[in-house]
Length: 336
Image (cartoon, rainbow, N blue to C red):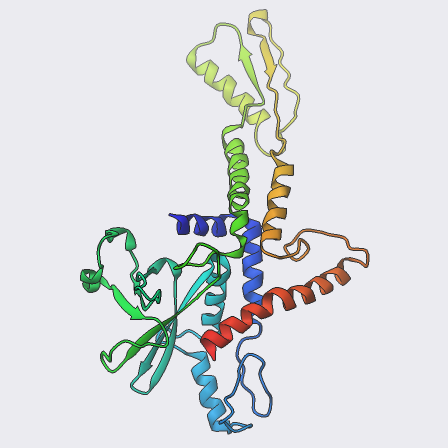
């Protein structure tokens, strides 16, 4: 339930979703592009490897980087998915499949993972991967769901036994949070209620807009008219008074009998937005909890040296304090 709440916040809070998307793009950068004679900051080479790889080796490496699993995904796509989950949910999972001359890597969505309870030594040795945990009783071992796709995968560096010539292992990265042993928490969790509020404010205004429409007024005709005359009268008034270009026109009527005069009652209309100040507070709290800046989150913030200068300074600061830390952990723990 808590994970579903996080997913709802990420998907429905515009400020939070923007910040997580920006973090993901900055962590991913230009991706992985090996070139002969040039080093790549995102791609390290072991000391045993030659300084300059041959063109054939580079071509083979480029081919593998562009297709690192049977889904046809590139290494950059895997890194982006891991970076997104890491910031959105405080956890990410990468599954390694090796053997039979291949080495694949897959991103595993957080909601598909269940963690095996640790033993007396407090070491977590495996996780379960399944796409519908809601049908599995909490007291169940879940192994009998193998026919429906459930599988148990050891935590890296341990690998599963050879099956069809392949072995599997999974890497779990989590953001540390006091009191949480099996799962990490995203750093923005302190603004979770603010993210929910940002959605609720939108929902309130949409609901008010949908349910708050009132007619411009009530036009009543008094007198004796048969059914067809009444329909003709209403159709004529509707044609003259409604539709594009007909708003705010004056309704005029000439009648011989006072009993046929129209009585007009205008309706009060209000279209003011609601909770604007509260929405600004929510956005500010979300930005703060993410260790981000309001200008990079899409809010106009004039700096003393001008907006462009301020954005450059903030970008450099966030690159050093937020982005590089994420790049280092994802590259050192997973990619390299």
